[in-house]
Amino acid sequence: MTTSTAKKAGLSPAKSAFWAGVRDGAPFILMAGPFATLFGVVATDAGLTLAQAMGFTVLVIAGAAQFAAVQLMVENASIAFVLLAALAVNLRMAMYSASLVPYLGSAPLWKRACIAYLNFDQTYITSVARYEARPEMPVPERVAYFFGVATPITPLWFGMTLVGILAGKAIPEAWALDFILPIMFLAMVAPMLKSLAHIAAAGMSMIVALALVDLPAGTGLLIAAGAAMVTGALVEIWMEGRAK
Image (cartoon, rainbow, N blue to C red; front, top):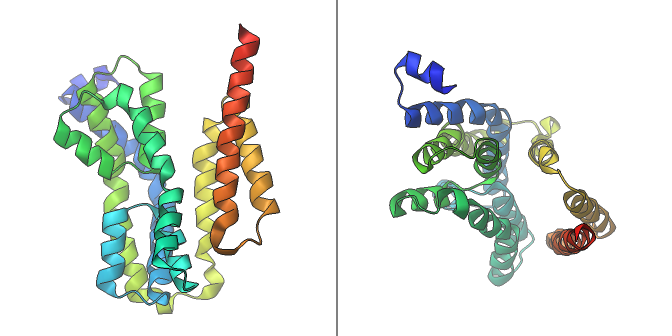
């Protein structure tokens, strides 16, 4: 929604930004719904009660880490390793948070706390793309936009997790809902590959992950993530050196 359109509709700039975020976040419900349902099914199969599974999804609200933790529980991994794996998978959230500081760092503390809770892949990637495209946006509008992106996704994530818990046994295995996860990440990450360093990091992660696919408990993914970060950093340094 443009500023002139918002004025015609009688909306304040913050409300206009919020509804723009809702509009941009809405397409993600097509992937988040099945993904959350799948988590409910997997959590139930892993032996979690309804309260445990819902508590997990509400407190953590990070799909990939949730799946990694539950998978390790199924494989009877130690609590320490479960926590370590979940933390490793979610380390990208620390990078997301650091990246958001220039855009949202001056927002009130309670709003930053809410943003920290709602800072997951979809809200981060969509919001940063908006902030980069419109650097003139004031902080209140950036905050409103971020909350707008989260609005259609977060309640659906909780609700569909509950559906997966309650109706998981009735969902045919042939539906293979687990294909949603890689498709969702590809759809989000592909538009972000804007430099040689990004492409090199993505390529390295694929090569290492495929080479180590037989390692237990997703260990190969953790190694691939580290290799990708090192590769991206080295390529970035090399590119900066050439530019001087």
